[in-house]
Image 1 (cartoon, rainbow, N blue to C red):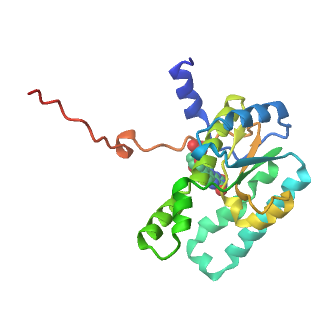
Image 2 (image 1 turned 90 degrees about the vertical axis):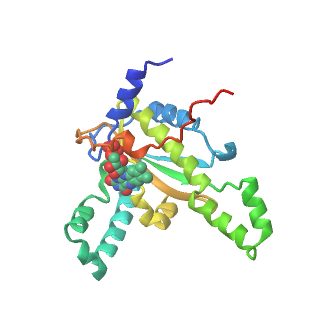
Image 3 (image 1 turned 135 degrees about the vertical axis):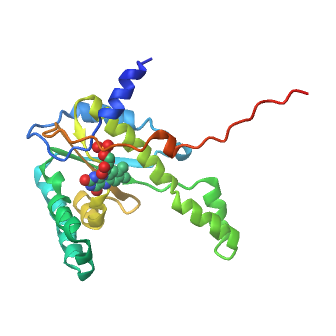
Length: 225
Ligand SMILES: Cc1cc2nc3c(=O)[nH]c(=O)nc-3n(C[C@H](O)[C@H](O)[C@H](O)COP(=O)(O)O)c2cc1C
């Protein structure tokens, strides 16, 4: 078993890094990290994930161009004006992954639990079925499973000395990225993970004290009769 202090350090020193050295990422490290990521817990063990590893610069640039184009579109809308400086910062950073030597596109598949199948068969008319269906969609099991795998992936890449950022932002160019990577219709592009050796040491974004985010419902002392 690994030492808790080492695990604690590994978890707390992982940072979202947005500047990378111009140095290729060894494929064997990527593969090992991806293999371990597939051991993440996932709904029904459907393993609803695929990982597309892109090291071809031209392809990374095309994905970045597509994301940048969507950023410029949104930023040009009159509704963007009220967000001032934040929009200007976003315009400068949304495609930072252009400078990464590798990017992993995360695809999500579809998972139907037994509850989903019953709800589908029940149809749209039963209001209770509708309510349960909408709650299940909100907490999408496939998305939760993919997120578990990405969490593992980032941590293991960090163990190898590789830096990453989990990026959901590129979803704004979902269609363009799926076309560029030839993603089949039954899969959805959800995240992009730039990977490389770090060229910056970002400040540590503080976490809320654990007591502020945890609530116990404790068992009271046993009353002996
Ligand atoms: C689901 C998810 C989506 C994220 N999307 C982006 C993104 O699109 N662009 C970006 O620069 N960072 C993105 N991040 C990184 C967060 O900004 C970062 O994790 C957070 O600020 C905490 O910093 P740390 O990762 O260094 O601890 C994302 C993180 C998560 C978990």
